[in-house]
Every structure is written in C-alpha cells, then in structure tokens.
Length: 425
Image (tube, helix red, strand yellow):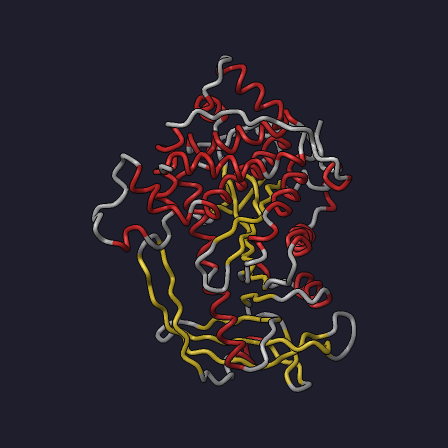
C-alpha cells in the first residue's frame, strides 16, 4: 500500500472512533473539519471548505460548517470523547505538561469575549483569548500526546465568579480521571499557587512545579522561606538536560540537590503530614531554579532525576505552540461567536492529536513522498529525526490534497446509555 492510501486509511480509522458518540450530521461535520484543517493548513472556514471539494457551492459549505460550530456544549462533549477513545494510548503518558497560552487578536474588535491577554511573543498586553493546554509525554520523551485544550475568556466563564485556579484544577481532574493511573503534572512558575498545591496534595495528584521562591515551607519543624532554604541545599548531583529547538539540540548541565520539606497547614499552626521534595538546581555561570515536587521518589537521587526529567520536557509544549501557530496559522482564527471559537479550538487540537500521535511512526515515508523540498541534506538521517512536525505538517498537506474525502457509511449511533449522553441530534 502506498503512503497516500496509508494516510487515508489511518485518517478513516481514527475519525471512525468518534462515530458512535455523535449523530450523523455532527459526525460528518467533525470529520470534515479535521480533514479540512490538516489539508488546508489553516483555520479559516473558507479555506477548510475549499479543500473538501463538495458538489455544493463554497458558500453553502462554509454556512453548514459555521452552523454546526454554534452548538452549545459541543466543546465539552468533544473533549470527553477525545479522552475516552484515546484512553489506551494516553495511559502511556508519564507526565502531564500543563501550560497557559494565548491567542492574540489585536484587530478583531467584533469577536465575542475578547479580553486583555499577555502576548508571550512580544511581552505586552493585547486583545485575545486564553488557552489552557495539556499534553502527555512518555517517560522517554519520544511520544507527544495532545490531550486537552480549552479556550476561554474570563468575562464569559461564570462572570465575576470565574477563577483561573478552578479552571486549571477542573481541566487536570478531567484528564486524570479519564486515565488508569496518576501521571505527574508539570507546571511552570505560573503554577506556584497555594490553591493548586493544596488541592493536588489532598487528591494525591503528583506534581512538579517550578517555584518563584516567595512562599514559606517547613523543614525539620522549622518554618523558613523557600528561597533561603533552597540556596543552602547541598548540590550533590550533576544532571544533563537536552533541550531541542527544531533540529538543534542544546545540552544544559545543572548541579542539583534535594531535601524533604512540608507545606504549612492552610489555616492552622504546624505543617501537613505529606512530605514533598524541594529540588534546587544551579546552572554553572547562571542563576538558580527551584522546584516543589510531590512525586513517588524514595531517595534524593530518584527525586532529582524525576524532577529534572519531567521539567526538562516542558520545552515540548512550547515547541508545539510555536508549530501550530506557524504551520496551521492558529492565531488567524476568525469566528465571531464565542461558542464557535471554543468548539473550533477543541476540534483543532483533535486534528493536532492525529498528527502527533498517529503519523509520527510513518513520518519519514510521508516526508519522502511529498514533492516539496523539506530537507537540505537528504542523506543525513538527522534531517528526518527529532521534532519533525514542521516538515510533517507541510508534507501532509501535499498528500491530503491528492485525496478526495469520501464519506464513510454512517451507521446508527451506539445504544450505550453513557454514549447516548454525549449524543447530539
């Protein structure tokens, strides 16, 4: 079977997993959007509709897609189904990388729910939307699994009662409950919040959170500032971390140490009984970094290696964000209705899940088949290895343009009561 047919069969197999959970029109719409995003490499409905090549006019196609995007609650149903149908593969994840991202829309005055967000690329405030994204990474760091994404505007999510902490906790709980084991949540300094830490300790949810150094903790029944304690920890271990950007690997070496600590009781004297690891790391010639870890580690050596490995994989979600914004033009999203934006965001990340999970194994064949120049030294194996998803996305567009999306025979919705609870008619 040639690579074009293999890709087509793979897409049909993956999209068919969602069929039992939705009515025929909704399933057809989901399949069309997923194919359209991957084939067009864009988020505009007009470009998505054009690559579907339907017998009806492009205007009718975009109107149909736009109408389906207006379904209330579809984003939540899609998120639950996505976690359910991928439960087995997602269970391979050892770390859950959580990150708050943004979609900036400085000139889109008529889009619903626009608010002020921090643009990470410019370091300035701009109009746009927040995103909470969660990806899974296996212990070796070779598998990237887009699991969950939620687009939100603070003034549209519960009004004055909206809490970003609550949004984070609910999202992590949704992902964790769908899996068979407890993964380790990895969060940057934005996760150094008491409400998150205390909740995850209560739920016995493992985590690695980089610290700002401002909080107080207990060590040997003495309350002390985290920063003051961290710089006194003996750095007994040398840990090397590989950070990849594109196909460039940068090796960073840290001197690392750890000590067991305890969190203060929230509204009483003394500390909690659960012990945590405070990991202190210093890169020669540079500054310090500190990590508060609730992880299954029996020794200091195990704690520092788990912490540095897990946090070292954080670059993957940052690279994913750069890739989807450059190759799929995510920030060009142009939908006026807030409901449509939330629904499209989930569908977009379902499409990215297909690329990252189901095509990585045949990425070399896909890149070699495409009749576009993707590598400059074709005989160099490293050109086809590493973070290949930029090249894979370009090659995939070429292959899918040669395929006319055929409609699958749509059967009756599943009769399982749990599935019918997600059914849209």
